[in-house]
Image 1 (cartoon, one colour):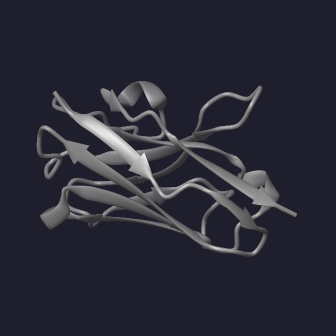
Image 2 (cartoon, rainbow, N blue to C red; image 1 turned 90 degrees about the horizontal axis):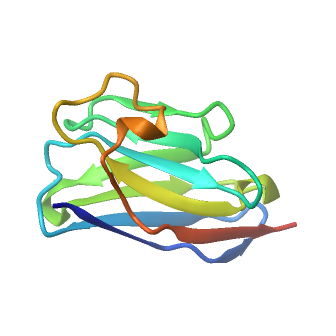
Image 3 (cartoon, helix red, strand yellow; image 1 turned 135 degrees about the vertical axis):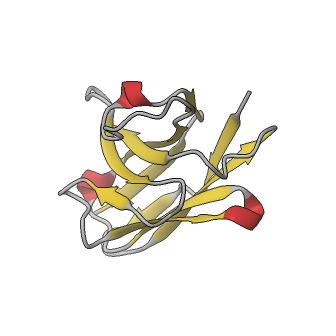
Amino acid sequence: QVQLVESGGRLVQAGGSLRLSCAAVGRTILTYPMGWFRQAPGKEREFVSAISWSGNSTDYADSVKGRFTISREYAKNTVYLQMNSLKPEDTARYYCAADSPPFNSDLKRPNAYDYWGRGTQVTVSS
């Protein structure tokens, strides 16, 4: 069983930066594709970013492309989401997720993932 724990969310002003972390506990995620999603009140959970198990392939939602960067640190069994130039519309609860074998090809879909964290709140003030 994989337990994912997100951290790093907080209140930040527009234009600021945050780095979210997702640490895996209990089992390695070294070979698992990982994703970040977000959900604002009254809205559906939406894809933000994903990274392959090797780290060589990444994908981003159009709304965050050029501002957010996903990465993974194998030694710490952790995935990061660096968020720059934050906007009020980035305000949401951010969740990380892990896909386990058999792996899915479309990592933009929430149902492609088998494990989810409880999320961390990001609030961007204008």
